[in-house]
Image (tube, rainbow, N blue to C red; front, top):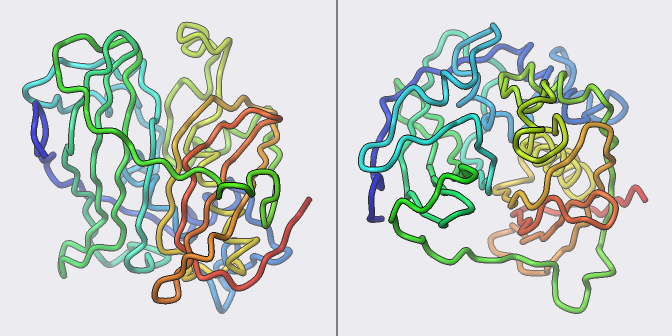
Length: 310
């Protein structure tokens, strides 16, 4: 880890959540009462937080109110690199590792978000990539619950002379099986799905107001990239992992193309047969029509069955 900005640690930030928050999240990514009551009903004997919920905590922090997204994102500049405009930033790629199950509420305990910059990469005219590691930690015990590595792509903000960055590792569908996934499932977004999802704490105006999207060339508002990322995690867990929170250890995908409100996303999943200590590598890709919107999809799962919706 070297180069401008690399290794910079942000001050720890307190994060908190209520049962209400995890219920809202589960509903917003498509969990239903039909066979996933334990994610959407707090009195279920198996009530659990959907594993990817912590990906929202860097946005939400401790607030139960709407926040100024741009002000929050621009609060602390990274030393040694230009100041980037958070009004023109998109998700690049996200990986999350699930180390301990999150409790249904943080009430009575103190949790922190600890973040550090892994690298800042100048991609020339297209823009700059900022790669960050974020962990959710019990402040009292030091136990790490989740670790996430993500990259933000600052559109049109490159050419400042920084390093190009390392080549990324690719995880395509298994060779020769591209047209025959083991399971396929879909999720239908509505025109207002982004307005529900943003109540989780990710209040980027790009997903509510048509104007930012028009300025960025999208023609209007687009879905949160993390909404489709989380929906894909949900469909993998439901169709391969028996909807059990403990059956997924790691999940990642690259944001390949924008998704519009009202789109139907289709997730294609492949078992690889590569199993270590009971965890099987699963590959996936998420499409809208014939267009791949999430690529490089990879998860480590305990596959307990294959249930294809389509």
